[in-house]
Image 1 (spheres, rainbow, N blue to C red):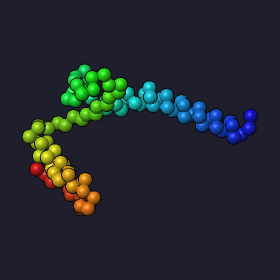
Image 2 (cartoon, rainbow, N blue to C red):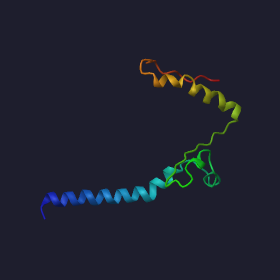
Image 3 (cartoon, rainbow, N blue to C red):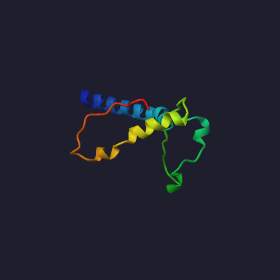
Image 4 (cartoon, one colour):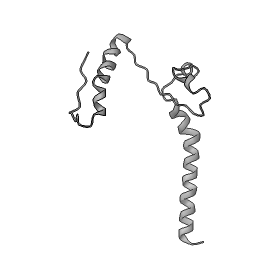
Length: 99
């Protein structure tokens, strides 16, 4: 076997092993990143739109604060978001302010 074929075979074998490892180990963890076991079993808004989906992914975070403390930040992040769609509205990014 020539060197080229050996190198090609080695690259294909390594790619196959890495692909299988990703599919079996990293992908399941990444699809449900941050969710608790209780959250994994729940139905979420929009689940009824595709009842027999072949795949899904939900990411979550836990914030140790009340909704009244978090809501002003969420509103501020969405403020002016339609401008992202306007190509002519190039502006400097805003800084988050304490609400």
